[in-house]
Amino acid sequence: MSRVDAHHHVWDLSVRQQTWMVGPELDPIRRNFSIEDLAPLAAAADVTSTVLVQTVGLVEETVEFLEIAAGNDLVAGVVGWVDLTADDIAEALDGLRSRPDGAYLKAIRHQVHDEPDDNWLLRPDVQRGLAAIADAGLAYDLLTKTPHLPAAIQTARNLPQLTFVVDHISKPVIDEPLEPWATHLRELAALPNVTCKLSGMVTEAPWTTWKPTDLQPYADVVLEAFTPARVMFGSDWPVCLLAATYNQVVETAETLTSSLTPRRTRRNLHHDRHPHLQAVMDLEAICRRALGAELTQAVELGYGSYNSVYRVELAGWDEPVILRVTPAEDEQFGSERHLMRNEYAAVPWLGVIAGLMPRVLAVDWSHDLVDRDWMIQTCLPGVPAPEGLGRYPRSGRTTFFRQLGAIARSVHDVRGPYFGRPAGPAHSSWSEVVIASFTQIAEDLERVGLDAADVRRAAAMAAEGPLDEVREPRLLAGDLWTVNCMLDAEAPEPLISGVLDFDRAEFGDPAADWTIRMAQAKADEREAFWESYGELDRSPDAVWRARIYEARHLAAIRLERYRLGKTEAVRESYEAMAKILS
Image (tube, rainbow, N blue to C red; front, side, top):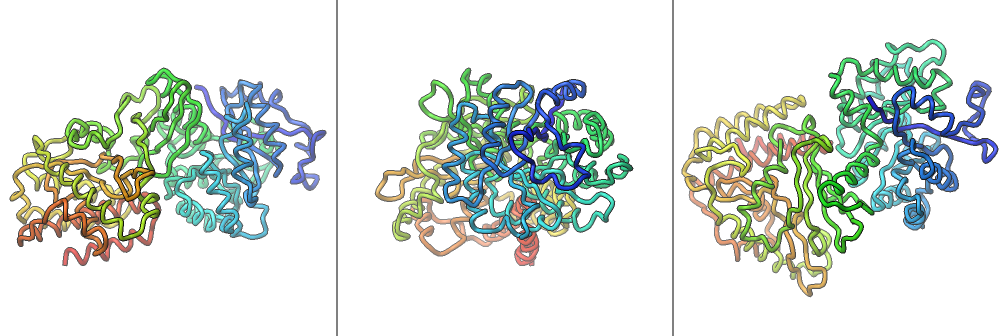
């Protein structure tokens, strides 16, 4: 089985001193270490790719590491360093990325655990620097200890567009209690933009007496919190030599993960590279297979809260394309399973707005190239509406909502062949769809330890009311609102140039659509929506159904807020649901 080592170092003390090497206890590693030293150790352990990680806060070292990666087949990527607080950080990143070997730069790291301020990550200049890293399409490695984790959690929440990688499981002291490290790490793991390296553990334990059983409780917390899909192996060579050989570290990782099924251990822990590196390598393979073209640049966009979305530039192509990749199947909730397949099944029913939608260039559900579904689409022109609307006076936004109402009306006028999602399963009645939705969301909530009694109560109410007065299935967009619209960047007033993301489309009652909920949320410019959409049914039965639809929205929102790590929003959903069901 081939493996990837997602974390190791090299250094040449004749070029520069490693200033962190203080004290005689570090004498065993106070010498030069090169890729040539690592290569036979890696080969003996079936390691075929590695990630070379910075050791000092100097851009010059990063340049040297990029040159090493370009000249050696073993190193597949580099985690480098730039000054996060510098005003010209964007230019510094561009300078590194534009080098001939710049494609090897996958992430940036800073020795946060050496900063005297535990909240250093929350400084405005640091937050600005981290945002620049996200804009450059890179990830950020978190080198922290337990006292820094609260700030790391808030930082990951502040920057959902940036992928964070926890180095060395945040360096807990192995012979001390698990808390508060475990609680903080679980909170960090609840955020979907954070992953973790199972690395650096042997040097946090007593160097000469540690055993794998000493490390097991810490590894169990990591694997449970992040799941194997978001955990990767790192050796931390040559630092690990203070406490273990390279092969011992590899074998210990095998021991610590032995309770996992062989497939999950092999595919996730040892075969996943640094997450951004793995993503880029996967994207390259996808583009070659689907489009016969070489990827020249990939930038992860912050639009998707569920799928990973990349704008990809290709050699020989004039326009970029959009590549969307789903979460791994074992990370998907039952109520969100195969949403991309549902969107693809909905395309033939969306001909009324085909001129506004991206064209599908390729899809794949086979998982023979990467272990998740993916779709390539054309890149819609314009700017995202949440960004573009700010350029216009509020009084001019009525034009936008009037257009949105017309688009929603045209979608809702499409008649479907059955009730339910276009991809199925097909239901004979609308009540079956709604009750099944409540039931699946309740099971998902209970699976993660949340109370779902109110969701099950809503399902019982749905079974007793007039849902089946809805006898004609109509097409619901699922997510159509401002966040999924593009605007013409040159228009003198808001002009919708594109709409996207129909993965939650279904056939049912248009009044249940997310679009209708949002159009009623406030009394502001959005009231122009109804001028083109038309009036809603306000009969007593329709008002009753609207309560059930709001309960379904709240249940789905609770699940999404949990997935995004928004604890307070999850709590608030119970209060909102209680009002609806009272």
